[in-house]
Every structure is written in structure tokens, then in C-alpha cells.
Length: 344
Image 1 (cartoon, rainbow, N blue to C red):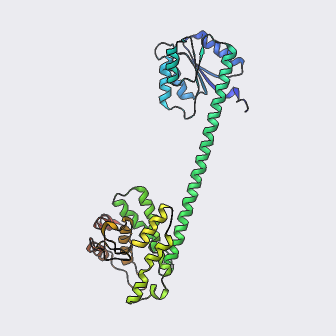
Image 2: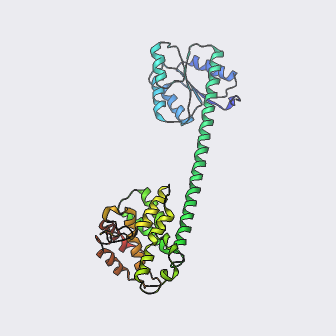
Image 3: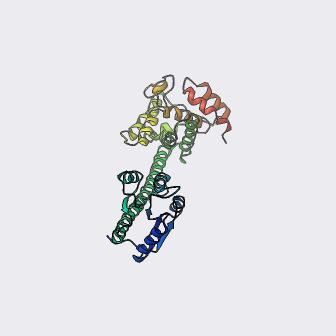
């Protein structure tokens, strides 16, 4: 490993004895260290340590006022640097108690005054090498974090694009623009927020709600686009889109696919148990499906389709309200009603 650039390192000398400070300054200058700062008191040392961010501190323990032990304690708890800063204690106190206490407070090593010049320079050099290694490791970690963050953003963008394409595939015939799935997604998000669901759940619901009708891929045009009322047989085939969508999304290992599968299968279940395909009732219906159910019906009512004209918004709201406890979860309806009349 290469020796670090000596002239660029910041070294802080802390000692109330001017002769000791002068000795260390001259010694360091002789060995090429040019960026050396001094502090003649503990209080001054703290200010310089926190503002100048030195690479190494040479610290005396016995000083009036704020002594070296207090300096160690404050620096340890201040969080002034995220990278290891070695503190080399340079003291005449050689007692076992002083050594133990200083090490517990974060001292890196000890030198005993007056000290051997060669030993001091070797210790300084070695600890600056350690400091450089810590800085290099920190920079690598930051680079890795940036790479992970960038990769995460790319994956999220890919995920959004895939959801968009799948949603459009499900709606491509009776809603070529895919706006129905977008509106249901946004409305479901607002309902979930009004219910106080966790932010992560809300974000996931906004995505997965777009896939609620994915199973329509398997419904023939003659049924999907029929302008009139469906026959009993056609109605049975239309209702199979819930199972088809769930099968397409089944066996997913991610929370997104797992929630999307639940929504695709259960968004036509009814709170009273009379829905399809599984006749689930009440809390047995996944909460995300109960939310999408309200959003889906309201959007379908208020927008025209080949087989129906759009309803007036107030009439549609009244219909949703009248189905509370029957078709819809009353808590979901309450959340829906709390904001829907204020919507643009």
C-alpha cells in the first residue's frame, strides 16, 4: 500500500504546555507534515476538532478546565465525523487507571511524555494510514450505496412500465387508452389514504389496482363489447376474468404480484357474501380488493362504455352509499365519501 500524502493531512495538537506544543510542531514539520493546528485548552480543541475535521489528534490528558478525558468523551458522542479519526494520547500520566479510562472514552493509543521522536513519528504515520483506509472504505460504501440506489430506481421504473403494459393489455378493447385503470388506481390510493393505511401499502395498492381487470384478456370481444345485456351463459364467461387474471398473476414471489393476484381475483366479491368467484364475505375479502371494488364500480358508473351511458356523479355516489354493508365494506365507503365530493 502507498504511503498517504503527508503534506495534506490535518493534525491537531492539544496541550496546555507551550514547550510540548512547540516540540511536536517542530518534530512533525521536520517529517514533512505542513497542515498542523494547535489548541492550548480542551475547550479550544473541541471547537477546532469539530470545525476543521482533523485526520489525527495528539491529545494531552492533564489540562485545566476541560481536560483530555472530557475532550475524548465529547468527541465520541458528538458525531462530528462519520469516518474514524485516531486520537493519540500524549501524556505524562502513565497510571493504569488513566490508560483504561482514556481507552474506554475512545483513545486510539498512548505515548508517554517526553517520548521518543522516532516512535512518535512512526505512530503518527501508522495512524494516518489507518485513517486513509477508513476514508477509502467509507467512499467505497458511499459509491455502493449510490449504485444500489440507482439500481433500485431502475427496477422501480421497470416495474412501473411492466404494470402499465399489463394494465393496457387488460383494457385494450373496451378502454383503449387505459384511463379506466389509471383512474381506479388513483381513486383506490385516495381511499386507502383516507383509511389511514401505511404509506407502503398505499403505494403498492396504487400500482396493483391497475391490474384488477387483467383477466379481460381472456374474454371474447363478442361478450366484452356487447352493447346490450349479457345472457346468463355470457355473464358466466365474463365473470371468469377474475380467475383468469389471478392465474396470470399467480405464484408471484414479490409483494406486488401477490397483492395484484388478490385484487384480480376478489375485486368482484361482495361484503354480504353474494359476489364472485369465491363468495367471500366481510373481512375474508382482502382489504385491497374491498378498496378497488368501490373505486372500480364508481369509475365504471361515471364513464360510458359500449353497453351503457355514464351516470351523473351524484347518482353514482348515492349508489355507492346505498350499497354500504351489502356490496361494499362500510369502512371503505366511509373513506370514499370523506373526499369524493371535493374531488376535481
